[in-house]
Length: 170
Image (tube, rainbow, N blue to C red):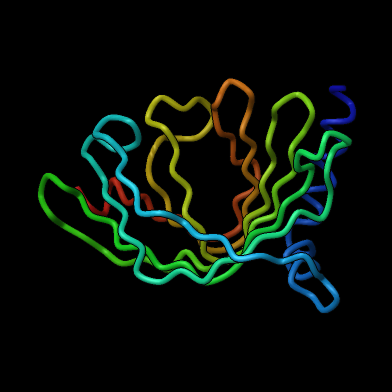
């Protein structure tokens, strides 16, 4: 299993810029609308203060090109327009950020989730995370995120910029 995970991770890293193009290319069917709901992240969970996310624009879609025999997703693609207003509820500072990008998610049988992020994407990371500093990030570029079964996030590929909104909104 460890060898298979290493091979899959290697394939994901090599394909980090190719998969988003394939995901949105011609002939790719099965897309259905999806959306991101407004959210509130409590103080201490990600930032030292509470963050509220209001959705300014949302035209997302998703598809599941591969499933396990029980019907659960093995691979999912997400893409489309997503713009979020982030607010620090303690000092009322806010910023609007574009999270329009694409994400390909691989769900491994052991509970690990590997995500390929391309373009602009939002990435909250819990304050107690091991492997990548906690914060509420807006990314731009190509990133690979590994969500381990213990809920820690690792970001082994970081080709682009990242803004930590915990710093921006403090």
